[in-house]
Image 1 (cartoon, chains in turn green, blue):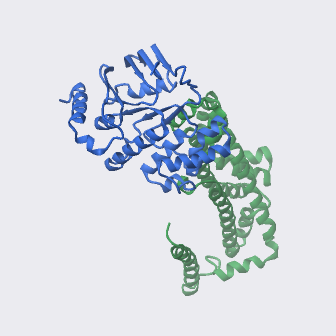
Image 2 (spheres, rainbow over the protein chains, first blue to last red; image 1 turned 180 degrees about the vertical axis):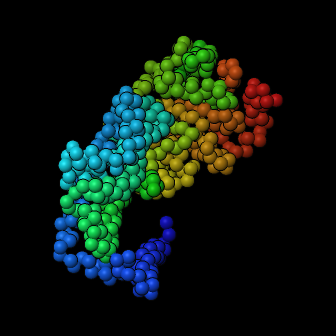
Image 3 (spheres, helix red, strand yellow; image 1 turned 90 degrees about the horizontal axis):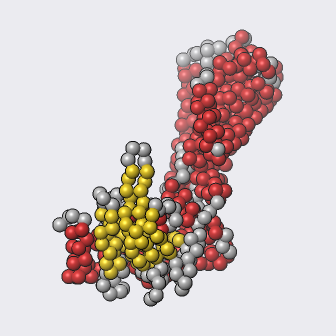
Length: 255
Length: 254
């Protein structure tokens, strides 16, 4: 709601709060005379980008690939599994409890196993991202597909509508807001999954780089890596948000 | 008039649950002529919604006869039922006009003609100019008007309404009663209207069927001899009071 002026004001305030954080960071480091290896200034952090040894572009590409591949596969399989559950009740009754149990496994604990089975690299790290964000998507999608007004089903039944019509006209569009709420949660988890994968075993990627520069106490590069990981996450989240805006009517969105 | 449009004789329905059977309807028998607006009135648990679902073909009945249609008014159960529920149940992601078109899509009716008809119906229910809005932009009463237009889109012969104004505030409800009568007179449909509002039942109905709970049974069936078009002043008339008192008495409230 609200007018244009109100929207501008909202965005302006959001940008200001971000800028304020950076300024506060700068002042804290400068006035507190904090050593560079404890906390680098914003300037030092950006300066870290100039070290060619760190191969920023390649590392960014690797981590981005892991996150996007793991996330996309999780979205496809997560929604697919939930659709199968809604079409075959017995499948849901058999598999859902199993998924709930499996979800209790801390995904991070699977890291060493994944390395044993698949060695390390982009694939296994994408798998870690997948493992951590698959379940929330299944769960929210399955829930969305289940939430159909019984009276609405009656309405379609009096018209002798088919199951397929119920699915395409009512069930699936009705589930979309739920699917997106799961996808938004999963977007954040996918980033964490990929980075944990890189921590546990990898030879490339921003997570890997962080472990390397930790040894030399190049805190500025670590800061930069964290910022870049965050930015990748924000891009992914932004894409999901944009897709949601295209597909879901405002009133139906679940935040 | 010849044969009635709806004929029920000795209709009985029992819901079998674990432990005990629940008698939802016993021995319901009544006739409805084409073009009537029949009110089914009674307290919660009297089986009025069950009866509506039997008429809609959604629930089977255990015994008795249910016939809808007559030689002069043939009835196709797949195309001749329009339903309105207590909640508007509009699809949030569809514009109002596309909500109205839902039954036409399901039945595979020609879209261009249906779209034109949807516009006419939205005008009939007083929603002209709101075709392209989304449900959340309309008030509860307006959403229910859209739901009525949706029930009329495929030109069904029978409209089944399950407490359609029960969720509205009292003033909106009065207004919607007048609107429904106007729509009914223009659209010339047979309407079965379920309500627990006694004055609403009398005000709207050409006939009132009273159902009581515990045990569920049909307690009364009488024609309402008030002239049409009905006006709000009629609610204070002697005759109107007699009808409502008759129902109150049956429901054990007097």
